[in-house]
Image (cartoon, rainbow, N blue to C red):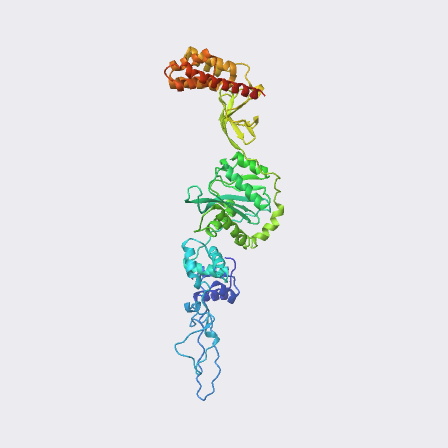
Length: 556
């Protein structure tokens, strides 16, 4: 208990509580804080009137003065004593609808009755004419703030938010908030990010309504928030939303607090989490670092959790939009009109004013936006290359059969060590089907696995082995994939048919995998006639010229 009262004050508080006085009125009458009075009343088992229990002590009516000689005496009102048990101080429900008006009577007033100011009764709530709109908002799950904002915007409601809050509390009862610890951060130091549930928006592809995702970034000092909507999420979209939020704020914070969602954290760990590489590089581009929370500890980023809930319950609850741009415009208008101009409950200051003080402390934005890339893991093939979008890039010697991490964008392909992240090779992007191998990476002798592959081709058939040896002799490690293609044809058409096709290729001097494949596609069981072979050879000659040109490009 905060304060200890003497016996006289204690009894006075208990008597007023039994009379049904509110805590605010007890404080005004006794000069005792509401918290102290509430503690004494609860200890005595006396029910405390809720904040919505408005009322006044019903005063005794003025004495009626009946004249017997034609001269009326003035009526003297009697002031009730709150400590008198005979005084009725219980709130009169009729006062809520007739405040400030004279109490109606069944007969008109005459000269023998005097109506005094003690009979003036308070008026009705200003929200009564808007009861249908308020009930509609409550049925959609909107809170008191959202309902008040709708009344002001759509109906020109002139009363205060507190009147709507009291009226809504009467309609659905009081809700006691749970206590939370306030984390104080320096200006420009921290931002908190999270996903929430957005409104229903019509998908332009399916033309059906689908649920969107709400991205929120909240500054830890000023509570300024940036809210963005998106249909889907990925590691790149998650990083792009951060970049858009930084651009809207005009700067970046030094720390970004997030939970352990997959787009940002690959392996959660309180001491050494593994971040998504793309997300980590985007934050580093803006000078920020990520700080994931503990697992199942949302209170660490309670400011953005509150910002997500505020947006879900206030501007977006129960609404649908035809386009994502329309929904974003509605959210931006609400952000500027209501969210930025509100007085924050913790700081007791306007959000826009606090953000104006915090904005100069944010880190300056870089001149160029981040260059996004894709990343993944690739196995080094027998030809010493990894495949990225149907193009092939050479790895250093010794990596055949092992896994490498690969990053690529519109200009470059980078091969990284999977353990240390060290850059092994960087190649310029190539067209589909093209190779990019450094001269130093060509093997000095045939690798063991390539020798085993040629041995398998010789076992499949004499002509198959001869053709595969010729391909490897002419094209080197680049021809390993074509040797594998010849062996795959043997599984599909049989070794006899493939061996015959390879014999035809050797006789005609066209030592190409494509000749064998076309030969089998046109005549999988019988030999081709001269009329069928001639156009095939002309096609292969053009293809061989293309191979020679590509080989020169690789060497360069």
